[in-house]
Length: 527
Image (cartoon, rainbow, N blue to C red; front, side):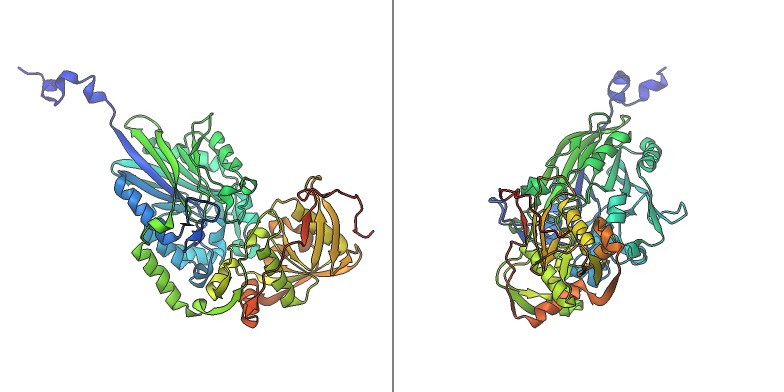
């Protein structure tokens, strides 16, 4: 009589072959901070690439990678809104495009709150994928604004995905009115609890984060180490929570050419440089019965636009949005030369916008944070869409009345570079970046005269800065008024009335340390 176990298909190797774990490969494709960059940009900092990025080209690259990989998941770490077409459609276009691209899950970024959380709650129902956030709650409750996590399954592989945002991204980088009646909580304990819940049920755990220091808005950031703002909060979370296989970060727009492993937990951290210029790629091996995943390969893949055919469905969606908003295509002016952003220093683009704010209000000084300027402008003719892309927010122009002392404090805060160098009009400044923060102002003139600490000056800026955004608290405590004119409308109207605009020269804010100028120690700040 044959024993029952002899009828098993691998009788002779029951202890060896039958118990060998089944290993499978799984690839994570990831993005962050794309921010509605529909068109490629000139890669002027990269000799090997002529044009880079563009959402339709990124979508084609994603399809190409999916076709060559096995089990693949596509994830995003937030900031899918912003830009003129996103604004015109109240975010509908962004969710429709990401659905067409086949995203499996995203987490909310601060830009998703640009039109108010009520608009976000309504429009994100269009998404054909989970929209995640585990630590934003309706104020005074334990009710989340979004799903805390999701479990994705494909080809027999299950991954748990959690989404979070932190205080700097949610509080300091979004308008107070747009997040009214919401509260954000410290995420570490929340993430650990969710990881512990998911770990027994999945092969991998991934956390999508929107944290780290606020991103520098500079097109060539990957070639300029001075504006790469790091991933300290992601790295800390990777070390403080047990059981995460990979953490995919956003908000700082930093980039990691390959994932970084935390030595204490083994958690990997990955992020792209944002704006859809690179696609993150991380290939893992998972084994049945073995916790965690083993990284096989991790890298960033450049979106070389000239080598990629634009994704037809994404192009159709963008064109349909443009047809529904024909006014955006209207050409209304031209520049004599390119206007380029810079984050830590004076920029001709910043000078131009600050001039426009001062022109629209008759204020003594115009000011705007560098991080508020979202796009460069080429020379030649410009459309309404291109101009609104420069400042795609809903902020109205505010005029704040402040004395010379608070104006000095404003410049000192700017010189700390916590949010980049504020761009100004109506002021001539010398500062010394080698001095301690708070002691960097050397000379300040307003309208050609040394600043008077007791005089009252009128400063034009966006409502976000006027209410203390980017930590300009000295503005929030001073009286002011808000115009009915938005910053974006002011830009458009300025171009309408001026056929050809000359981009302002540099020289308003001079860092004497950077210019190797001998410091005299004499200040033109009046007593």
